[in-house]
Image 1 (cartoon, rainbow, N blue to C red):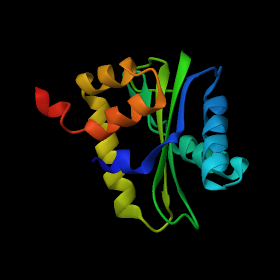
Image 2: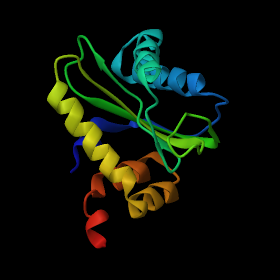
Image 3: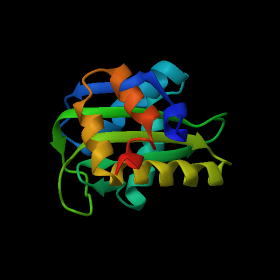
Amino acid sequence: MSRVAAALATSRIRLAFSAASKSQVLDEAGRLFAAHEGWEPAYVTERLAARERVGSTGLGQGVAIPHARLQGLRRAVAAFIRLDSPVAFDAPDGKPVSDFLVLLVPEDAAEEHLQLLAEAAEMFNDRRFRDLLRRQSDAPGVQRAFAQWPAVAGAH
């Protein structure tokens, strides 16, 4: 199982979410982590927004990986949000974003943070994986798609 899949619980997968802006997506991420991890939504949202101010986490191809390191977090956690309509996210290809993998890692886990980001970027860089993920219509299906990595990519 991929590192990302291990960090992603179905309870933190939100599909067909309506958002009109980057800030609304980050607010929803804050709520998802607050509901299932006990964090204050505003704290999570602010940490994610602070990272976005450094530079966009948009990858291109309709995907972004907002991420932050949080003090007091014991293990990496992830959420996945799919929008019903994409929003501008300053992605390098200029295209709006509809799929968001949101990562939170412990503040002192720099290596784990980099490994998660690298794995997520590799996943989303693969068209087969993006297509598989976008065909999923429920949280268990999304979780399975992440869990199947890297077998999906290995099917070249």
